[in-house]
Length: 196
Image (cartoon, rainbow, N blue to C red; front, top):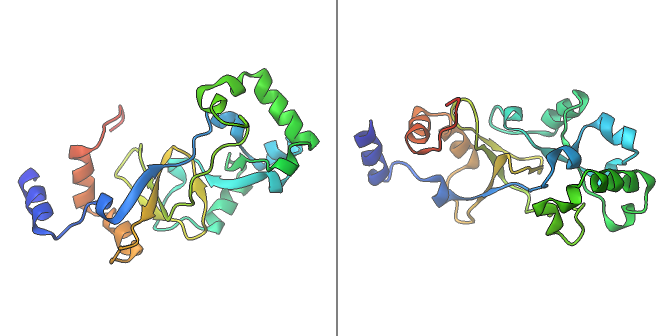
C-alpha cells in the first residue's frame, strides 16, 4: 500500500491538497462556550442577530459535499451553538452586549491568553471566509465540504482557501476526499487520536 501511494504521488496522477489550496485554522475565540451561542441563549441575553454571526463550529455538522444555508438553519432550529457573538462598535452599549461582556469578565474570560491579546477582548478576530472546510479531528475518514453560503468556521475545523491557479473543479477535490486513497493516506500520515 505504501509503495502504491508513493507511485501514485510521483506519477502526477494525484495532487496534494497543499498544492491546490491554503489550509488554515478557523477563528480562535479563546473561550468557545462564552463566544459561540445558540438562538435561545442569544434571546435570553438580549443579543440581536446584528451582533452575532452564523458559524460552523463542529466537525460533526459536516456531511455531503457542501454546507448550505439550509444546513445552518437546521442547526439554529435545533438550538445548536452555531452563532458567534460579534458586536460591532455601535452594539457595545446595548444592554444585552453589556451583560454578556460583564459575564465574561466575571468568569475571567478577558484574562485568557487569546482574549487578552486582542485590543477588545470580546471581539474575536475574523479571518477571511473560507472556500471550504476540512475536518481535522474526526472519527472516520476526513471530509472536505464546500462553503457556498460563505460561513466562517471555528478552529475546530480547517479553513480551506483555493489557490488562484486552481485548475480543477472544487467539487472534484471534495469528491476526491471520499476516496480510499485519501483515507489510507491520512491513516498513514495523519495525527492519530484515541478513537482513531
